[in-house]
Length: 157
Image 1 (cartoon, one colour):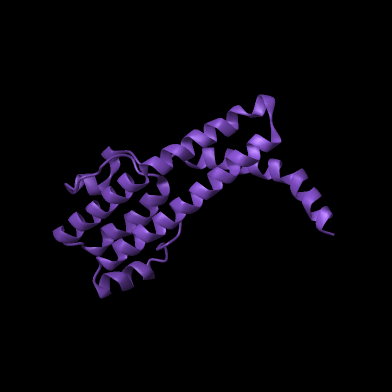
Image 2: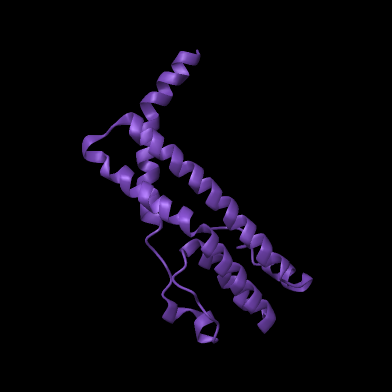
């Protein structure tokens, strides 16, 4: 029974990983332009393009009538998050390129190794994303927290 599962994993894992890489590359191509940012229009400092998933979290915060102190604290939290995860995000980009470059001369062992590294990094980044969201959530008043949760987009990508 165990050998059957191992055989199935060996057969389908490369295909699943290739699909994962293709979807990952496609989903990271969209970012909101700074000039269209309401935060920028309101005079808030946008550090750079943010991934769509971060914007889907930040967008509802605009409806919460944040104080200037809250905005500054949130911007600091986001800046720290970006700085702390830059190396991991760069490594993810590199691994995705390496995996894509394997397609013409596919090597199962190399692809699995790179995919496992990518998976580890993606897990670390997912944790970091949730941690920064929790930190931002702590900056809100109880009323703002209730409103954010009621918007039903909190925590969704």
